[in-house]
Image (cartoon, rainbow, N blue to C red):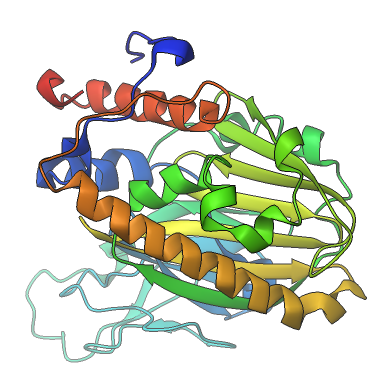
Amino acid sequence: MKTARTPLEKAVALDPSWYARPDVYEAELKHIIAPHWQVIGPAGAVSDAGDVIARDIGGIPVVVVRSPEGALNGFYNICPHRAGPIATCDRKGLKRLRCAYHGWSYDFDGRLRAAPEMQDAEGFEPARIRLTPIDVIEWNGLIMARAGDGPAFDELYDGVMDIAGSAAMSKLVFHQGRRYAVASNWKVYVDNFLEGYHLPFVHPGLTQLVDYADYKTELGRWWSLQRSPVEGSGPYAAGEGLYFFIYPNVMLNIMPGRLQTNRVVPTGIDACVVEFDFYYAPGAETRALEDLEFSEQVQEEDRLICEHVQKGLVSGAYRPGRLSPAREAGVWHWHNLLRDAYAANGLPESAV
């Protein structure tokens, strides 16, 4: 369902109640985060049979495993017995999936193979018990997954690689990952990513590397793109920086010889974790240390400003402000996608 669009030239930001209401947060987990395709890790993390990664999608624990046939299979990381975890962390070379609580074990296709000491349970039928599957694919060296029924992957990511070019993500090698906790609603972090308006004021170091005067925003159906020339100094090679946001919580930062993926994971109504993974072309990883140090600085600057914004949003003293047509088109686009989702799921009009 699409809501009526206020033109960008007249647009205001979201009502602050959307950042503080428990019913909104629960609806977002179920109807916005879980059903949409998102990057959950590098394909190399599950390169061999029995390799497993454990993540969270929309508040649902999930697990992805490589089968002996080479397929990627994904499931709720929840044993049907009593909700124990199938995997408590990433693992390598498992022979079977085994619940860490009571030892029930499963094949890599999700079928129950053994349930200790259940022989006296009348009517117990192991053949009818399976792990709940989720959708998972491999795309350009990334594991993409969803835990619900939403738009098709090709619909969400349509046009991204046409712009980036097929070589942008080819032959890149995963280098390392970082996880950052932010004491703000997850949408505050996304809002912040979607505009370069704050760069001169929050990121003085980054502003020296990107061409703020030539910073442009483009809009797709489910994604937005910020692009800017970048200087060949510091951690970046000369060329163009492409900063994609794919609804609802994925960022792909593509620069010459490198890729940084971000996934914003809600962990509470006023808390989130941002998963950063770094990839480099062969030879470009010599920049990795400098790149990581610079990224840590930028992330700390973002964390601090997002936490300040969160306090302002929930203070009761803020009313939605006007958006900048020149600098906040991505925010406007994202807020409209959220408004559509809220309306489709029956959230009260009073908070729109």
